Image 1: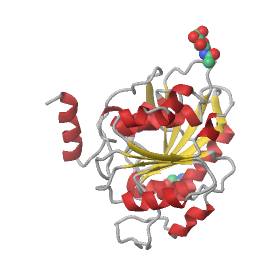
Image 2 (image 1 turned 45 degrees about the horizontal axis):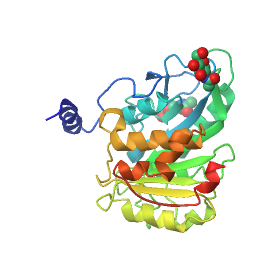
Image 3 (image 1 turned 120 degrees about the vertical axis):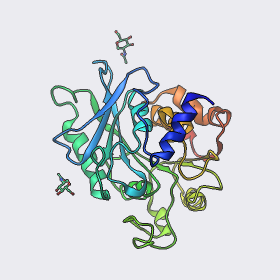
Image 4 (image 1 turned 30 degrees about the vertical axis):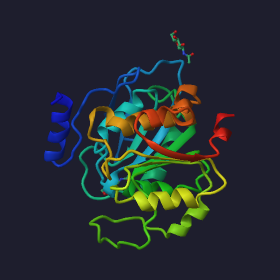
Length: 279
Ligand SMILES: *[C@@H]1O[C@H](CO)[C@@H](O)[C@H](O)[C@H]1NC(C)=O
Ligand SMILES: *[C@@H]1O[C@H](CO)[C@@H](O)[C@H](O)[C@H]1NC(C)=O
């Protein structure tokens, strides 16, 4: 057994907490930290970003709306290492639940901090995507009308037909599935195949979304994706390409979605209207 597999299993045994696996697979080794001006969040950033490169922004909501900003550490560190700043809801090892306002706070903070002297000089708040896993995806949908946000990413999630009303043990920011008709931003769906509890919901949302570019990929590992693997595994690779394309306008990111990259990596995909993102 490869040592990485052993670590993944260990991660599951210790409560599926991510095991710190380093600084990401990208060109800019990254790490996380707390920032007093953005309380109750965790920031992921390259440790020494080049001065001549701007950092687009990913705003992230955790699965289970868990108020723990390092719950998706492997995924988010990896994303940052490709030249992004990631603002995750929840302080490191925080307890309790996040809420939608925390995503809005991250977006506001990005706009206020971008270009300020020092560490955040190169943050580019004209390029913001909002995403989340499971409950965090439902939070992300709430920012559909926020003009400061350009793209949505829905990971193992989709609108729920009924409000679980705390029945899942978490406070879900429930909205009716017909809400998809109010979404007018491009959405990329990263789902876990038929064994993912959100498979049908995510699919229904993908189908109900009209008038904007959309992509849906299924990687058949179920609801918990590959987030506990080093660098977030296959979901980490896909997420990086999504942001390199949509926020950094890089063709190597685009090709993952338009030129067979995702399929070669094991994703079953559907898409519509992606051409308009290439312009
Ligand atoms: C951070 O979380 C604590 C505990 O929930 C809360 O009392 C406080 O108001 C929050 N701070 C901000 C700036 O939102
Ligand atoms: C930034 O500077 C480095 C080193 O001089 C150079 O290799 C790189 O191409 C530059 N990047 C951009 C985006 O200008």
